[in-house]
Image 1 (tube, rainbow, N blue to C red):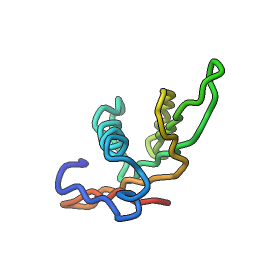
Image 2 (cartoon, rainbow, N blue to C red):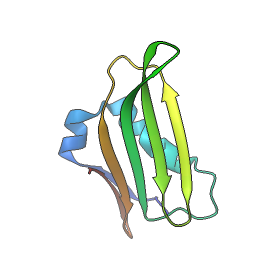
Image 3 (cartoon, rainbow, N blue to C red):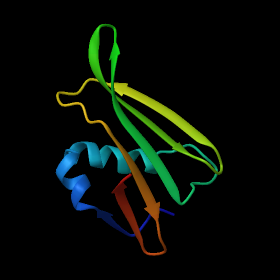
Image 4 (cartoon, rainbow, N blue to C red):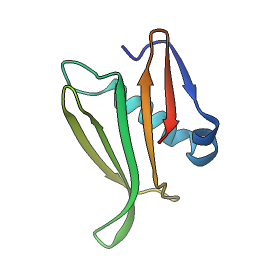
Amino acid sequence: MFEGTKITSEIIKNEIPVWLQNLLWYMVEIMEVKEKAQIQVFELSHTVKDGENKQRIVHYQYQPYYYKEYIFSAKNIVNVEVVIIYYASYVVMLKM
């Protein structure tokens, strides 16, 4: 699952840096779960940790349940919700 042509919407291309788009694709690839759901959800937001501004990414799916949170330094913080949807021969990244 999640193999095939990867399609990124124009809104995603314009609002999220390429390195961060690639990171979201990678997060799906490295998920440690028995089964990946057809819909992966990402909440990207600003947070403060140890007095510093950080990028926060919450990645989850509903069935089977999966939740993972990442916090790291970034020059430009992105606040957006993203969904990656798997179809038979392609995978689409969209802004929610």
